[in-house]
Length: 104
Image (cartoon, rainbow, N blue to C red; front, top):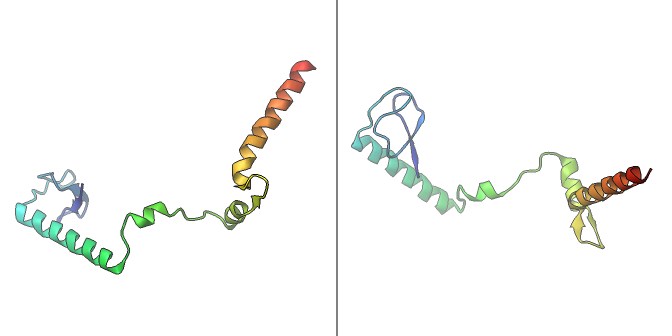
């Protein structure tokens, strides 16, 4: 579903809405069609450049350089990154600690 902007208050609204919830502006069919044509032109321009808006959603930016380095370090035995293996190791250590405390 596409969203268009209200010409009066510049807030997003659905294509199917007749009036803006924020300011009460009544959207005419001509204005809606004009904005939809502009959106279509923008999509065609993005596709002609070779980039689409959904491609950027799939790329996860690294929050921190250390996280990037930790994820690139891999253990040759498991072929998994350190971040993936830390959670099971912590769980096993906590279970071992609970068993030891139980028998004491």
